[in-house]
Amino acid sequence: MRTAIVVGAGMAGLAAAGGLARTGWRVTLLERAERIVAPPTAVVLWPNGRRALDSLDPDGGWSAIASPLPDGGIRRPDGQWLVAPRTRSGGNGPVPAVVHLEDLYDALVAGLGDTEVRTGFEAATVRTGARRRPAVSDGRTVLEADLLVAADGIDSRIRAALAPEAAPVSSGFAAWQAVIPGYRVPDLSAEAALGGETLGAGYRFVSIPLGPHAAGKGGVYWVATAAGAARPEPPATQLALLRRWFDGWHEPVGELLAVTRPEELVPQGVRELRPLPRSFGFPSGPGGVVLLGDAAHAMPHHLGQGACLAFEDAATLRALMAGAAPGDALTAAVETYSRTRHPRTTSVVRQNRRMSAVVQARGRLALRARDAALNHMRPRMLGRTLDPVSDWTPPE
Ligand SMILES: Cc1cc2nc3c(=O)[nH]c(=O)nc-3n(C[C@H](O)[C@H](O)[C@H](O)COP(=O)(O)OP(=O)(O)OC[C@H]3O[C@@H](n4cnc5c(N)ncnc54)[C@H](O)[C@@H]3O)c2cc1C
Image 1 (cartoon, rainbow, N blue to C red):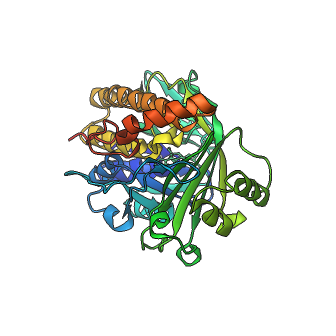
Image 2: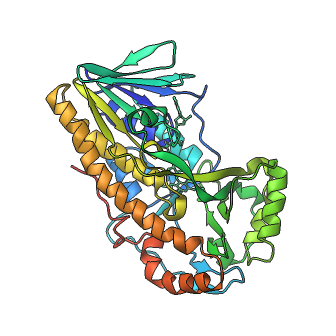
Image 3: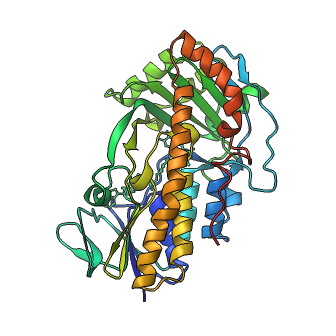
């Protein structure tokens, strides 16, 4: 039987392991943590991400756990509209949706099928060679398989060994996320309850209502970003800072920050890979190694596409590997994976960088240029179906 090892049980690894297991691969999923735990946040699934998930597991019930993303528009901190909200239409495809990560992880874990899950295994080294199957080791045990999938995030040890040119660097800002459970959401006007995005000078705040599903229970997800590095202070101090920075911003920014508890705050310095790895696929013996998710293409979350691209990676991998037997067919599939995913990812990274100039604008002239540019960028920001980023469809 064809064997695959997937390293990393984040969204990318869980999706890839489930996809391969459903196409007749014997899969071992390795995770360094003692348990697979979803971060207590949420994620926006744009139409491309939803299509990828549907193709990975048509019975995954994604629609039941995700709620349509209301178009709350884009405002300035004083509440003035930069882009007014409109009714979203997904055309013939799925509409953008938001999902609590606990629900998404539960669904991805449920889709693992016969995958063997080994937690507490930290892959430290990788071995490849013209005549050898790829292998990973944690320093004690060596595990080898026909296919090795590196989904071990931005600090991937496997990518560092195979594509050392790609280095994680700071994106120049920090992010804070939180989910306020439904029973503690403050009373908000109908307009503010829709959520939306607010852009200040170097600051950004996005709020999104979660649906009435298991983990969301009518709560609100918010994400704030500010120029600068990750803060070293304890969460309570960081929350106090956020309340000060966003003081005076229109409803619901202050209201949501006021009810957020320090233990709900998920702070992080935002990083990206620069440059991207030259290749996402490395033949080895009768098979090879592929890079997936943030291990391949970590990028700042301006377009909210990191996880969606990871699901695209997993869906593409599943389609290419479905009929590939170890030997020439599998090494060709590893190369095709890279040839397919690299240009697609490069194009999204490029659009993300353009967006970076918009959302991180500071200074009077830059802010004026940003406001003028917003109307042109609106389709991209809001993931409409004509948008080349969201338009992706899975391979047959
Ligand atoms: C503020 C913010 C908002 C975002 N919003 C969105 C959004 O709305 N939509 C969207 O699509 N994307 C969004 N993203 C991006 C998205 O969160 C990431 O792209 C996604 O989480 C990457 O998943 P991953 O599985 O590749 O990596 P990770 O989530 O980092 O998972 C890697 C896994 O590998 C494990 N691991 C690491 N090293 C090893 C090792 N050596 N051995 C074994 N296991 C290992 C880790 O423990 C972890 O479980 C956002 C990101 C940020 C920062």
